Length: 372
Image 1 (tube, rainbow, N blue to C red):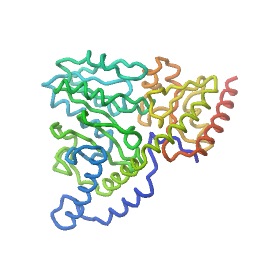
Image 2: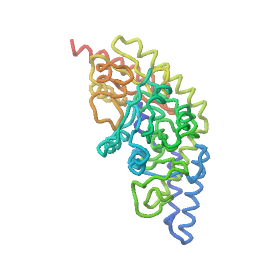
Image 3: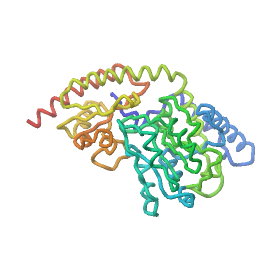
């Protein structure tokens, strides 16, 4: 099997699974006052401290959620509380569907959504600043596009928005965590999921600065914070902390390895006349988006799947036939309708790349011949 769909989800690391299993020995509810509950809470606190230290934030700024989608919804829907500040929100055409859906929900309540233009996929800071108004309440821009891998200058955007203290700056960082280095100093809120860096599905984080008060999406008592109710999933939290620590143990070496694999893929795929490379120099090496003219993405996907090679068409959560992200990046509807995403990781091997190149070549030839 050749798995090249790591941006959709990653397999659980064996060491992470060991931590999960060990945590099952802590049977108490972390919110219980008896000794079993206290022991469970101590493990959660230790996990939270580790996550906060890695991200260089405060433990009190960590909110556990079911994943990035819930975290994104929590921040965006909470803007209803801040509508006295303003009802304009700025975003991009490269966001995840869990950003667009709650934005549409707000739009139906009278909010105005503005899309900042992109240059080679990047937000232009001068243009962004020109779009800010007294009515702007939120800017939400993903650190890394899930489809094209475009890495936005989040740190510079954060510094710019610091001049406008009433504007909240949120970033979906789920495609960045565990893959690249970044700085959240000037970000007010950020979302990510553990299953993108070899942790379990069903657990994620909403990072929120202490001075930002949000209305909880799930109410009904305190969990680890008052901003998200529910019994804390101790095993998932402890294993996520382990996954995060492992993902940054050799981050520089891992990035270098992934870059080399990405370059091999691009060099090979560029030889095919019907292949266009959509990801560009601003994309993280973990994601390579291409379009194959004349072949439907799902047809190519299933042709590769028949040889146990697994990739994606659009984001696994996408609802449209054409990739809005690729369209925004290339301004080419044909490329947007024929795009596929190859996503690799530190666990991708040279053998995986060799097998993909061989199987892709056969599928490319056979599928184009069928059209003749």
